[in-house]
Amino acid sequence: MGAPTIRTSDLATQTSRRALLSLLLVASLSLNAGCLSSTIIPDDGRPLVVCTTQMVGDFIRRIGGDHFHVHVLMGPDIDPHLYKASPSDIYRMTRAQMIVYSGLHLEGNLQPALEAMKKTRPTFAVTEDLHDHHQDKLIHLGEDLYDPHIWHDVALWAQAGEYTAQKLIELYPEHKDEFEKNWQTYKAELVQLDHETREQLAKLPVKIFVTGHDAFSYFGRTYGLEVHPVQGVSTENEASVSKINQLVNLIVEKKVPAIFVESTLNDRNLRALIEGATHRGHRITIGGTLYSDATGPVGSGAESYEGMIRANVHTIVNALQPKS
Ligand SMILES: [Zn+2]
View (tube, rainbow, N blue to C red):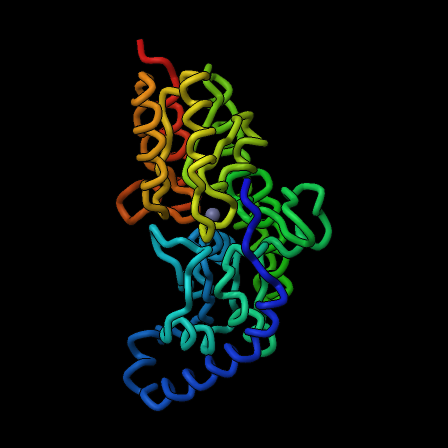
């Protein structure tokens, strides 16, 4: 497991510079606000909520019902570790009534912009309560650093949802009853999803799970799979040759039938694993594409958080169960 390359001291020094740049950008954008506002900002009278990932966006849509206009910055196949804000993203954030992000440094490059936004409008991470009060539930990586991929543990993600519901009620107390009811409905779906996931994965005879980067530690911990990522928690680090060789050994020794591609990563490293295993006489296939850090495109069935988890479980079970 490679050490993450997040340097908080660098972030701090970059914050003021980037915040200034952002402001300059916004100022220049505002000059064209007449044409921009109509295309970028919807004028339907509802508060604009900018969310970083679709999974976070689902919380706001499901809890908030029709009360908000939700805009998600990172679409399908977008790698949140490397995502940089575009001028229109910054413009939207400066017009939003609320900004909600995943947190735990998932949105590494956006962090300075998010910190700057906190000064002017409600801006919070759905994981901030877990970070502040429930570190024991998180996978610890280093000093104040935690694995951000908590949505792959459905029950833990539901805890982030609970916190999100509390925050929305705090900010919009006039909708308390409705938000609470919506959250209970969504929470019940998540409990069911967690149960289904557990049940399906328990049946697998092979519990070794090789994938592109270290996004599935929570998934493995919760659902009983041994996870072997090629890259670390962040995709910023390249995989080493020794890491590839080590994984080829494991695949051959344990007769792992399939490895998995991730929708947000290129599959160069996995191709190297297949070549290595084939060279040693072990046939291995790509078991399919997993949605690790982003939901799928519209029409894929994985465009929602729940769809994403179900699609992953289906892909894993299909690839790892013995063929009769
Ligand atoms: Zn990731």
